[in-house]
Image 1 (cartoon, rainbow, N blue to C red):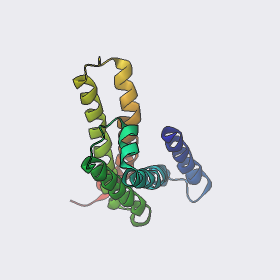
Image 2: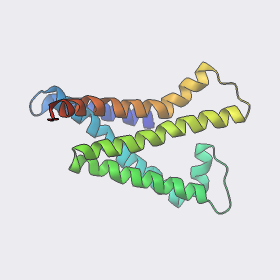
Image 3: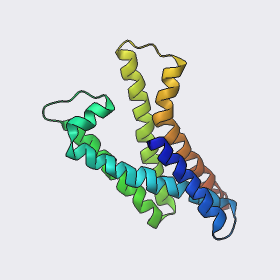
Image 4: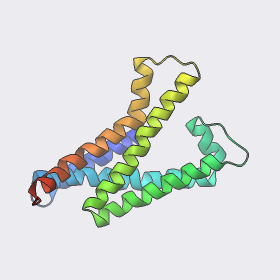
Length: 164
């Protein structure tokens, strides 16, 4: 479901860019970045944070985590999701380099989640087949790549035009 939402938001950014304003490469890339940033990494992750804080046992079970009695990790994950979600939502309003901060933070989180899921699978004795690695990467790592690539494309002309 989340992958479908992410794909729809990428498409919405494309449609928005094609139907409004000037058709410049930078604007096109920016809108393709902002829509998933706010919709997926913002509002959808805010919902995940609320779920993690309101029902920590179910949140842990849905992620394959061990449920602990005092739930410190679930609370931490819920707050981390919520903090990154608020940063992503603010990126629509603040734009500029603020988008970079939000994208780098969230991408780092999802890349680390990819590594942790693979490490836990290996520690539990599961074979690291190409299918397993690809499935884990498709859930977390790919989101990081798709989030950072437009940012690099969007910000690189700014860097090239700066004096010094």
